[in-house]
Length: 86
Image 1 (cartoon, rainbow, N blue to C red):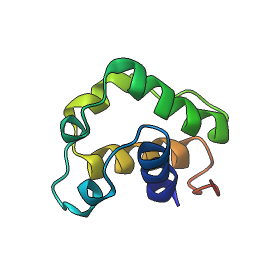
Image 2: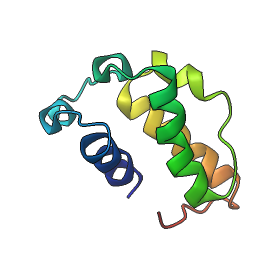
Image 3: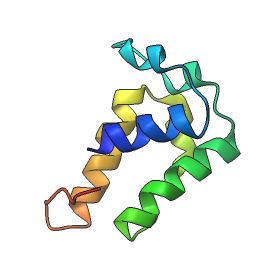
Image 4: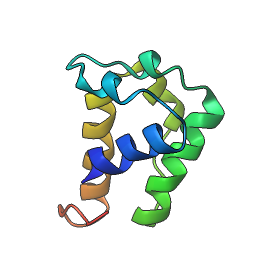
């Protein structure tokens, strides 16, 4: 669910190649996102979650999966351990 939201946003809005997401070791750096791209992408998530993510620029140095895991952790922390439907 979170992966689909982010992946679809990056493919459809930011025009990223869908084949990139087949790489198990995909890094955020591989997506060539600048800080504005990152903020816009995270705003989509924050809008659906109802809270602001901590320090979004730190994701630029993470793997794609690491970013998803961290975002899910923050969503759960803000929802009594539950993952909300995105």
